[in-house]
Image 1 (cartoon, helix red, strand yellow):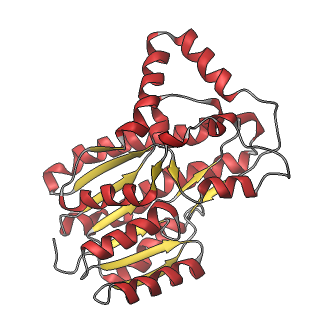
Image 2 (cartoon, one colour):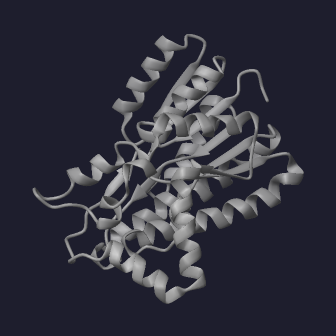
Length: 286
């Protein structure tokens, strides 16, 4: 890897992206971090903080809305123009809609597809020539929710399942070219995402029981997740599940649903059943 690797992190203004930027700056004080999200003010605050804390780190901020059709192309063009290429691409930006599928407006479902699936594919496609030239690394942030289909996260889970399939296919395609492709499967994480969900609900209303029933011991600290993900830069792995104590309940329930579909249906329905409510959207650091 280059002495001053260019690291592009999408969704860098909060959550995993923000924590990962700080962790990579600590580990690689000569890196050139390119941070992108919709909220330029948050990106600039993060960049200033990183420059103060890690004087050797070069940071650039590029505002981008990856939910727009031309968002990935514009972002890729700006990164190539400013940085000359990319050594590490972290596809982290994501959009969650933690409600029943029938509650969601069609444009909300379409935006989830755009941000969670189309944007990583297209951004990677635009940048893959540079990644091949530099024998770089692609890190895709997926989700452990793909272990079990839940009605409260149906569209979101579908996008992450698609991301996982593409990740494996891309890894096999790029292995001969020297590019490493990694998939991260976080479980529930303590970030601002849940607060964003609550902030969009009417007074006194709670978000879906599938979220309410996530016990505190199942959630991971975002800094711990960032440390694990940063480790993939030096020691790539095909798939990284965050943490074992977080992911195993999803795997157990998924196995149960596979072995005995009626019982799996019963468990998931009981966990997620609630009266229909108006659609609410929460975005993660776009």
